[in-house]
Structure formats: structure tokens, C-alpha cells
Image (cartoon, rainbow over all chains, first blue to last red; front, side, top):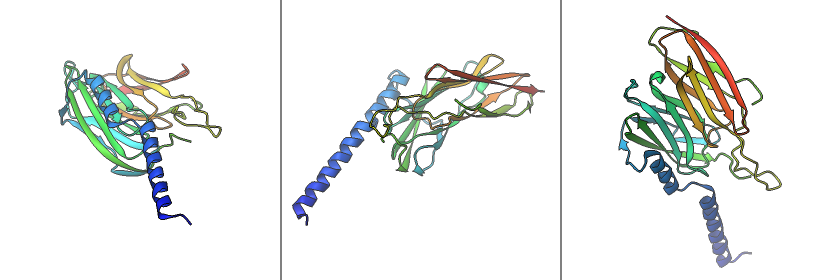
Amino acid sequence: MATRREIIALAAGGAAAAWLDAKSSSAAPHEAAAAVAEFTGGKSPERGKVTIELPDAVEDGSSVPLAVAVDHPMEADNFISDILVVSEGNPRPAVATFRFTPLSGRAQATTRIRLAGSQTIIVVAKTSDGRFFRAQKPVQVTIGACTGT
Amino acid sequence: MTEKPRIRLPKRARKGEIIQIRTLASHVMESGFRRDRAGNVVPRKIINRFTCTFNDRPVFACDLEPAIAANPYFEFSVKVTENGTFKFSWVDDDGTVVTAEEAIIVR
């Protein structure tokens, strides 16, 4: 029978292993922030204009619907040119970058993404004159998209 | 990509209307993060770019990362002002490019 001390040691070891695993396989929030900074050229995005449709919670992270939209004109000299999607909890922060032109009519796109675990998704939109708008949304994931075995 | 991509869009539209286009490509989107039973990393193989043009002018594109789910799906909008042809392309990591075309009548 395991002693109390052994059980505590085992539990601590397990927690440490889980932590190491998480450290080695997910993009930490600072990596996500670095990806955003690279996209904005270091500018701080403004709040607003961007909406994210993503479920609050999903059982399976392997295919999660994501819709992004920006409330902004799509005119020849004033439009949304790019929308960056970044993950704080996947092996790498980059998820997708959508590219638009005035012919897009609306700055909106829907796709399906992989989520390795519960995390926050960040969306940053760029205007044709170099302004940035940002929104973020947390999502709970029961079973992550398989990134291990 | 083994099967032809599926594309949904209206056959006709009014001048100036904003239409929705949906596309679905068949692709495993191997992330490059998985390991096989022997413990070896399964090499990355994804569609890394999708583009849509109308009468050869860009309307929408996406740079995809391994975080895009298998069988990449996109829904996006286009403002149509004239008759024309949409051209779609899916670019694979291995250099393969799959293309498709759809016409629309605009009145």
C-alpha cells in the first residue's frame, strides 16, 4: 500500500509532467502577443469593430467553427485588407490570415479551426490605411485536437 | 487532394449585390505535430493558401496554418457588379495547385 508521502510525490510528479507537456506543446500567450505585434508592426490595436463567433465550449477541438467580421466600409480607398487569427493555446500561435479587397463587399470570413485545448483566440483586423482593431474570445475545449500521438 | 473541391454560390445575382461563397476542399491537413505509432513525427502537409478572384481581380484569400481543420472550409462574401467568372485555387505544401472556376450572371 502506498504511503501518504508516496501519494503526494506521485501527484506532484504528475502535475510537473503535465506542466512540462503544456509548456512544450502550446504557444504561450506571449508568443501570441509576439505574432500580433509582428502583424501590427508594433502598433497597439484599438478595441471594437471586430466580432468573433466561436462557441463558448466544445467537446472536440478538431474542427471548431470560427466566423470573424469587421464593421468597416469596404470602399476603394478605405477597406479592411487583412484579418489575423491567433491562438494562445495551440502548438503555434498562427491560425490563419484572411485577405480582402474592396470587391469582398464585407470583411467577413468563416472557417473551421483546430484547438489543442481551452484557450483564448485573438483576432486583429488591419485597415487599408494601416489602423488595427482587435477582439478576443475564450473557448473551453474538452478534448483537444490531436497534436500528440 | 483526392476529390474535387465543392463550391456553392448563386448562379445569378443583381448588380451590386453582395453574395456568399462557400468552398470545401478534401484534404487531411497533416499538422506536422502528430507522431505515428513508432514515435516518428508525421511530416506536415497542408493546404497553405486559398485564393478567389473574380474576372482575374482578387476578392478573397487566406494563408492557412496547421491550425485549420481537415477539409478546409471557407465562407466569404463578394460584391458583384458584372457578369464574370470566379477562379479558385488551393495550394498544397507539396506544390500541387488545385483550381476551379464558376460563372455568375449579374443583371
